[in-house]
Every structure is written in C-alpha cells, then in structure tokens.
Length: 205
Image 1 (cartoon, rainbow, N blue to C red):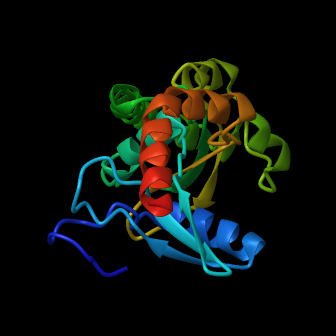
Image 2: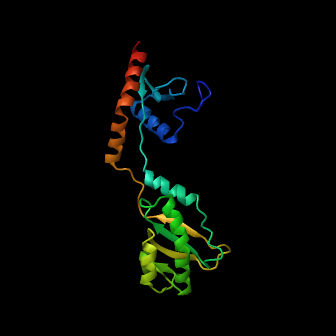
C-alpha cells in the first residue's frame, strides 16, 4: 500500500489488518482505503466507503506472545547436529512453555540424549515410539530426561543424512481464545474511542 503522507511507514501495512479491513468492506459492500499514513498522531486505521458514506475503522489484534517467542528462538538457533548425531530427528515440543533461554538449554542438553538413543538403536521416543516401523527400543530413563526439556516426542527421519539435523514442530498451541481477544480490545478501548470520536467529528464536519 502506498504512503500518502510524510514518508514514514503506513500505519496499516500489516497483512492481518489489511485482511480485517477487506472482510469488513466486503461484508458492507464497500471499499477500504488506508487512512493511517502516519502524517498525524492518533489516526484511525481505515476508511471504509459504502454508498458514498465513509466509515472509520480501527483494527485491534492480539497475538500469542509465548508462541511467537518460541518460534523466533527456534529460528535463531542452529540445529545442525554434525559431530554429535548420526541421524536427523523430527521432534515435537510444548511451544507455549519455552522461551529463548529454555530453547538454548534444550538444544544443549537434547543432542547428547538423542545420541544415547541412537547408540541404543532406538529410533523413536514418546508417542512416536508406538508408530516406529523399525521397532526401536524404549529407554524410559532417557525419555524422562528429554520430556523435562519440554520435548513431547520424536523419531528418526533420516538414518544417513549428509548433515544430521534436528527438525522441530509443535503439538497445538498458538491459538488465540476469545478471552484474550476481549482483553486486548478492552486494553485499547480508551485509545480507540478517542481515535473514532475524532474521526466522527472530522467525517461529519
């Protein structure tokens, strides 16, 4: 979306906010245009024009902080296990209970534990072990230690990789419940009210 103001980043470039504005405009049979170009303080986000009437739209959204922090930490961590593991593993984690520090700790302690599983010819652990086609051994003491790191289960996905890697996924998590959304809207209620009141005065003048 092009900037209409002072050269600063538009206030409605966020793809999720664009989607929200498009949904509202579609439901009303109108057109949404970015209003918040950062040319002035306290600007509302969108103008939605319906049958010649312009409606001010302010978009408020919420995100799952722990979930985002988890995946950011995962992306910033090196999961190359060369020199430690012989296989590549796919593991699943509790993404809502791990932060940047815990991810680094998990990596440091996880690789040696996975290596102990490899040495014992175990190719899966946790729930994954029940679907292990190779019938790998179950080693409860190692599985308990792995679970303490926030790891749910895992399995070997490549027994002879050029570069052994640990691939991470998650079981659920990341969803935003209605209570979180309501709390976010209430947090922004006063500010949004000021923006929309100013918008009403401007659009009706």
